[in-house]
Each structure stands twice: as C-alpha cells, then as structure tokens.
Image (cartoon, rainbow, N blue to C red; front, side):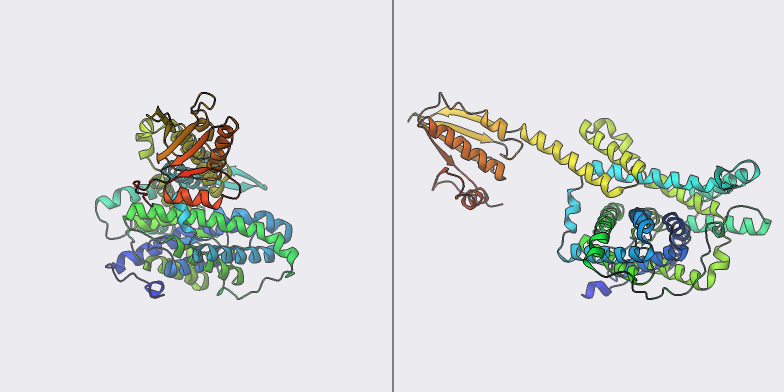
Length: 510
C-alpha cells in the first residue's frame, strides 16, 4: 500500500515551480470544458466542476501514473444523457457510483492488462479522431444564440474572437523559443485576459457558459428506489460508462507512457478511477475519466509528477469557493486558442508519413476508428470495433500460414509435418492437406512446428481421425507440446485420437 501514498513520486526529482504552473494551466482549461459537458447533459453546472475536482484529486494521488489528468469528461457524460432525460439526476448519481464499483473490480482482478490487445493502428485512429473532436468542439465557441437559434458570430464579434484566438496561438507557438520557465499556455491565457480587461474588449467569457460559484461538494445519497428493478435500469448505463472511462483512461495512460518514456500501472489506474467515480456518485459529481486534452496540456507545460494534478484539482475547488467572480471574466478566446494547440499536438502526424509503408488493413482500421470516434463520439465503440477487425485480420492471415510437408517412410507410413497454428480459422485449410482415400493404412501427423490452440482444432482432429477410421486407417498425433497434450486430455471424453509418445522428443513448455 505504500506506493499509493507516494504522492509526489520521490524516486524522481520534482520541479515544484513547473508542477504548480502546469496545474494552474490545466485548471484554466478544464473549467469551461467541464461546464460545457454538464450543460450539454442537462446537469446543474456545478455538477461538472465537482466532478473535475473529485476525479482530479483522487486520481492524481492514487492513479496509475504521474502526469495523467482526470476530470468530468464528455466521453462518459454522453453515456448518461438518456438516463438523465428519462429518470433524472438522482439515477445518474446512482449509475456513476455503480460504474465506479465496476471499475474498482476491474482493477482488483487485474483486468487492465487487456488494454495490451489494442493494436497501434487503433491507437493512431483513436488519437487522431480525438484530436479532430477537440478541434471541432472549439468551433462552437464561435457561435452565439440569437432569438433562440444558434448562429455563427459575424462582424466585429467574430473579428475580435478570431484575433484573440490567433494571439493566444501565437504566444503558445513563439514563447517556448525564448523561454520555457513558464508554461506558454498559462502566459497566453494571462496576456489575453489582461488585454481584454485592460482595453475593455467585449467578447465571450466563461460567465457566458455558466456560473462557477458554489460551496464544497455536499454528501448526498442518491434518492432512488433501491430495488432489483432499479439495478436492472442503471446497470447497462454504469457498465457502458465504466467501460468507456477505462478504455479512454488506459489508452491515455499508454500515450503518456510513450511520451514520457516511463511505465504506468493500468490496474492501479482502474482502482483510482473507480474510487473517484464512486465518490462522485455520493458527492454530487457527474463522474468522469482521464482527459487526453488536459493531460497533454499538463505534459506540454513540463509536468512529470503528481503535484500538478493535485494543484489543478485544488485550484478548481478554490475557484468554486472564492474565485468565481474573476474566473467568470476569463475570455473564452484564450481557452479556445490553447485547446486548438492541444488538438494540433495531439494529432499523430507521423501516421501520414508512414501511411504508404503500413499494410492496407492497418490503414483501413486506423481510418475507421478515427471516423467512428468523430461521428459517434464513442471512444469505447470505436476502439472495440478496431480491435475486432484487427483480430479478424490477424486470424485470417494466420490461417493462411498453415502448411504440411508430406512423405512416406521406409515402413510405408505416411507423415504429415504441420507448420503453423491449428485454430478455428485454419481448420478448413488443415483438412484440405489430407488425402484420406489414397493414404496408406497408417498416418502420422507431426506437430513439432505447430500448435493445437482451441476447441475447433480439437474437434477437427477428432473428425479427421473418424474419417480415416471409416476406411480402416489409423492416425497418430506426434510431437505435441505440453499445453496441447493438456487440451486433448481435458477433452478426452468427447474425442477419440491416438497420441504417439516419443521419448526422444523434448517438449518445450511456454
């Protein structure tokens, strides 16, 4: 348990100035996003900020790695919109708490390792799709409501908004060439903020989204009918929310691992994320998961420890308690500029440079995952489809690799030396290798360079043995590895195959 209380990872040197400034930058970018997601789902605005505080603090302290930022993310909130409309906020809180319990169970039983099944093309598609979503979501800030209809800004308001965004982007791009002592994103926000206040420029601010003033998150038991019917109602929402959160979280964790060249703990992240969502359900929060945009803001600001996440969470709480009047005057243009640069930095531009060198199926998977992410805003579904297609492609390619070398020895016994794995996709090609009618009375199938991997392979061997038996011929299986022998032994009640022992063959155990 000691590792869970190592708040600042004392095994590495912590730059406190960098961490604090990075945390302040993250807080500035997280507030409008959390408010927007809450309003989108029909929640009270403070529910989004409470989620940002609780998720951010708990996962910063107990999460799977330093540098990862969690908050009230849109990916998980979208799942709950239907439940909010049909049954109200209390059932949403119950679903969030249940999702937290499910996520904790995933971490306790160490199921986070299954994120390793996500291929690199799926990662490219996931990251590129998310970068485009981040960019497109910023375009909404160039719109306003006129007579109840949402329309694009025009004239002077559009020029002011575009100019301030361009100024923000310019500072973020150019400042690091002169100094990296202060995060460029934070400097850009402060400069644009000061310019707007000093010159009295009329432009959209955080206050135009919602008020951020409030108190401490209140303890609140969801007021629902605690029954089996209620569990059946909220369980699907909780399961989907938990899955989406873990998928986005573990993929973001892997991305941070690549950027920093360090290794995080997926199972620990699952437990921390689940604990944070459980608290959200009882402290008026809408729940959430790791946020890739804010994580990249954090990393680009130089953070490599847990302190920045803690600072960001406490800053959000402090703003809710006492700093709302100031933060509500923050120009949205400054935050939009920062997030646009995050989107540009998130996009895997290398995927364009290597696209001609990638297999066609990998290109298809990457593009498909990106398109699903953009169109449906469902990261879990996009990744799941990408993994399934990649697995099917792998199975197909592996199935084509099964081969057989055939010869008849001096005793008139025909040998089939099998190369390649025998599994569900390769069974048909495997059966086509045998000439049952013309083969001699005795046949040996040699698995020295092959493996029997599943029930389909076992059933195929049983059928092959039966076909030879019908014409009075016998089949022997030879050079089976220990795990293959165990598979056949477990199925001996439903199959009838003859295994030939070879005392000179050394079985290699994987």
